Every structure is written in C-alpha cells, then in structure tokens.
Image (cartoon, rainbow, N blue to C red; front, side, top):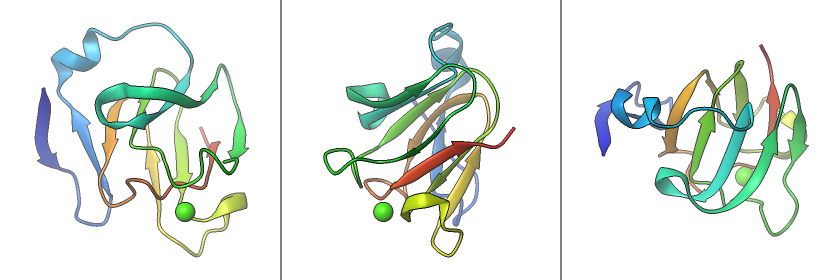
Amino acid sequence: MLNTKQLDATLAVNELDNQTAAAIQGGAAMTLYRHANLTGDILAAFDGGGVRTMSSNADNQASSVRITEGKWKFYDLPYWVPLGQSVELGVGVWNFVGLNDKISSLRRIG
Ligand SMILES: [Ca+2]
C-alpha cells in the first residue's frame, strides 16, 4: 500500500507507509529494484557503504529502493555528477517518481 504523501515536488519520491516498511526488516543496507514497490530484479545491493554507476542493463531502470541503514544519494547522471537531478534518502522504502527510470549512479553519504 502506498502512502500518497509527496514529500516535495522536486524530491522525486514517495515513501511507502510505515506498516509496509516495518514488515521489511533485515537484508542489505540498500537494495535497489527495477520496478515499483520493491518488485522486479535487484539492480544494486550493498551492505555497509557503496558507490555504483549503473551498468548498461541497469541504467535508467530503477523504480524503488529499500534502505535499512545509512543515508544514500541517487543521481540522474553517472559518476555522481551533481548537475542533474538527485535525491537523498534515509531508512525507509521509497518509490521513485520524478527520478523513476532515470537513476544512473548512487552512493552512500551517511
Ligand atoms: Ca540517468
């Protein structure tokens, strides 16, 4: 079930509701999925820290992410170039909206 709260028009994500998030525990610090609501194949997963520029089969494909630890930043452009759109997300389960099918790189920032 989706929480319809839009955090900010420019933030580009929706957060799943607390009940959904609470049901999902353990696993990697950050897991990035091809489709919304944590479905489809996993495009990236890290325990602890990590950085990634998406490979060609995963570039501009991600639609949701589960974060169980830390703070992560997701970028429209590869190699963490700060010129394009980006979003910083903490622990939770998120569907990308404005950044849906746009993410080209990511890194842990906290
Ligand atoms: Ca992109």
